[in-house]
Image 1 (cartoon, one colour):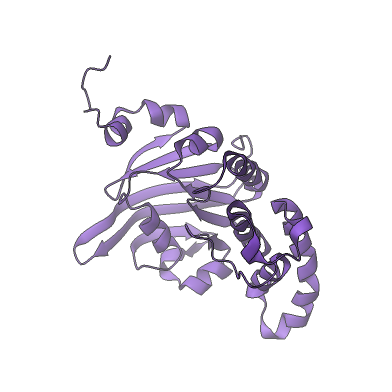
Image 2: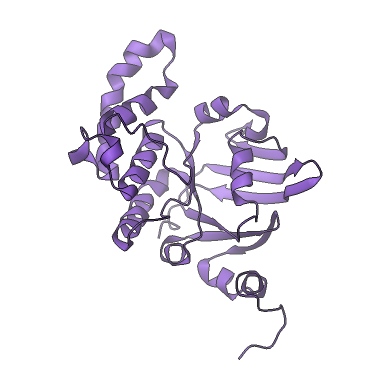
Length: 254
């Protein structure tokens, strides 16, 4: 577990609300996301998990505040949020399949380059890219087309693309969906390796993966925070049991 290392970075979300024509998809969420731990965001379909992340990455408008390094993410455009060090993956890997693994990482590394520093930044990119290749375990596939990678490897490549962008906050949407047991284990170990220097939030439905690797869990339901805590604390919460297993709160259980 990474919880023993908690760094100084954090993302503090207060009263975040996403309103779609009167329907509150996210309703007054307060959430603090800390550097150095794997923070899992779980809940049934329609709970508001992805909408919350969409708001934090500039894809949907929201009210409230989301403070990271003295900036309010909710007041910024999506490209400004990326430059501020916040990145995400989606449920379906969005790599350039016709390009090599190395080229995908090199393109991602160039997202922070400005015209007047392009040459200097370009000389620095290979070091960052080679380090990312080692971290995600794809160094031996650097020149392989991304399109022929296994499903899990494409997800690792996406994580690598966030690494070369120097994302300090990472939102990962169902990263292990469709992976084999071995790939899920390798993914968890990869996230543990990179967590100490980052704030990592994983939207996940795979409860076995969550139980194996979560340092902290937030449960959402109907656009609101239902429960928070360690895996054990969340699993013991009667409200969470009701949502996931249909056990009425206060009902007598054998």
